[in-house]
Length: 318
Image (tube, rainbow, N blue to C red; front, top):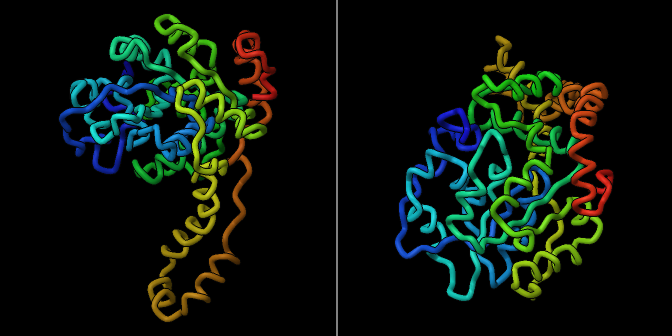
């Protein structure tokens, strides 16, 4: 389990996520889980599956039950209650990406197997270095919006150093999460291979309909009569588009004449002033340096080679 009593993925403005969700009776154990990896398209797949008439997807999308000691203490009835509204002809699923954060979170696969030995698992991967960068950006957004910690001014390399320090309260094993071979081996210790489907983000982008058919066949639900939605769902990029304006606005609020200007200037003029004064984002705060990318590529190389043989695709196509 995580060394922190409250892992970063369970933090909210009010404390622990899902604390306000009561226990509903007559629930069901989950039939399938999208176990990760974070920032690889799990939200898009979960959303597409939620529109299939044969599928009931958990809301919240990531209940984190099997990976969080604080939620395990609430008991299995609390977790199964999340699916109490599922129809008798529907299968139940969720998409907690914290399930593939071994070794930070240990024992997840065994807990899931004991809960339902027939559970099916879907694991999505992408270029492992790109995944690290994407998760770091999401972490910056999450810490600012939810925890109130603002790291937007830091080079992304510095954010990586902070987040990868096990002593940090926000440590979430970002680099280890990109060692896909290690993650999936943990699940293969308990689940047979025919209950695990491994996909790549590249497959979803290049062949969305064909890849979704693989998912549907794997889950035994047949095609969805509704059109497939293939637009990626991710708001991290939108957050950073707003950052330059927000930081400019913060600086202006500190000016002694701000209260008067804010009161008398029309909205259109204030927006124009913000646009003209907003500083372009420092590329170092949005991208890993070439040196750190090379360092991570070297760290992941041996794991990538094994995983390439496993799925039959070179990592450049993930």
